[in-house]
Structures are given as structure tokens and as C-alpha cells.
Image (cartoon, rainbow, N blue to C red; front, side):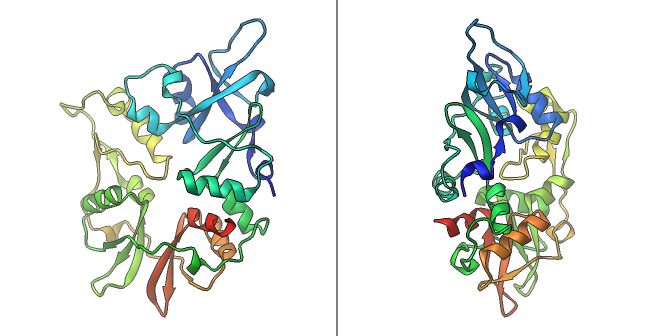
Length: 298
């Protein structure tokens, strides 16, 4: 199987064109709940250029890929208006590359999305695309999850205030915490999405600084909620102080270490989750994340 078989093709991608402004990308990220948008530069014989966004363009042969604008780049550069300076360079891959090469690239670069570029931008592929292919049996998923799981497990105590738990997730750089009860046994899972669902923008703060929230509070929060991974702004955001147990998912999907990667992929896709705790004899034995499944293809 090749990258072209799993990617979202160019005709289904929304892009923004150079020259352009912050607003060109912001409109798509805000209105369509995208986490990123590709930036292209039209190459036309007559020297013309389209300053706006394009959807399903047939001009792939006359454009050059210039990077991705993500919500993170907009938030981290609140004063930058030029699209060219907001676009982030990304590792790319060819459409005829193998899924195995793609998995290796994502693991080595630590990225969840990769633009597909031949002579020009032809698509975009994500970790979820590979996990879906594995769930459908289109790529190998025979490896036992115990051989792919991470050695470290991030845990939270059920009585921890959510404000503290959010900071623990942020400092650990993980999007989840396995929740333990008073006896040290697993009783739930808390994810970034759980935190985002109950947090709210605080209006009217005297000192907000030059932040995106200060410029557009509604977009700041609603836009970030859709990211769903690894970024939670704290400026202008209020998080409830009640214990983690009130916000966690108590109905936890688990697997044993001897289950195969394909079954883990199927569970993740059907439940729309990115991690599954592993158990042995009722005890917590590890965690398998969606990106860990890519190691089965190496």
C-alpha cells in the first residue's frame, strides 16, 4: 500500500494562497474546525495570483507548496499578519512512498500530519489515516500491543483538582492521564478533550497582554477546542477546580498485552480515542497510543 491510497487528495483539501494574511487561514480554522491548512503559492504565466483561499482547486500543476499554518502557529505568533511568515515548514512525502516509509517518517519527526508532495501538493496524510488502514486490515497489524506500548504510564489521582491535573498533563507533554483510586487501581481516564469540554474563557480581564484571546476571545477558545491534542492555552481560560473524578471517563476501554495492533486500531477508530490502557490480571500494565501502532510497520 502506498501513501496515495490513504491520503486526503488535493481536490478535497482546503488551501490558502500566497500572498495572503492571517485572516485567510483563520477563517478556515475557525469556521470548519480544521487544525491546520496548507499554504500554496500560485505559479501563473501571466503573473497573476489569488490572494484568498481555495477549495478543491484543479491548479495543482501551477502551484508550489509552502508549508502549513496551524492553530499553534497562529497562537504563538499573535502579532504576525503575513501568511508567508506563519507557514511552518513540514517534512513531506511522495504519493508513491510506502505506508511503512510514512510511518517511519512520522515516528522520526514526531509529527501527526504529513503533506504529500510530488511536483506539487497532492494530498495530506495523518496518523488517523494509517490507524484506519490498520483497522481495516489494509496494512500489517499482527504485532502484539505489548511489544509496542510505552514503558512509562502517566497517572493522576482521582481526587486531584482539575486545575492541577491540567498542568500535570501540560508539563508531562501527554494528552491523557490514567486515573487511580485510593487503592492505586485504575478507575478512569482523563484526556485533554475532557478538560477542554469544561473550561471556559474568562472575559474582561484587566491584563491580557497581546494574546490571540485578547484579539478574538471567541475564536481563541472555540478554535483551540477542536485541536484535541497537545495544546491548552491558560491565558483567559478558567478550569473548574473540582476533582478529576467528576470529569474523567469511567467507562474505560482496555486491552491485554497479547492483543494485536489491528484490534487496538479498531477500538481506537470506533471509540474515537487516541490511547488505550493495557491490563494484566486486572492491573494496569501499560498504555498503547495511536502513534505507537505505527511501530508495527517498521
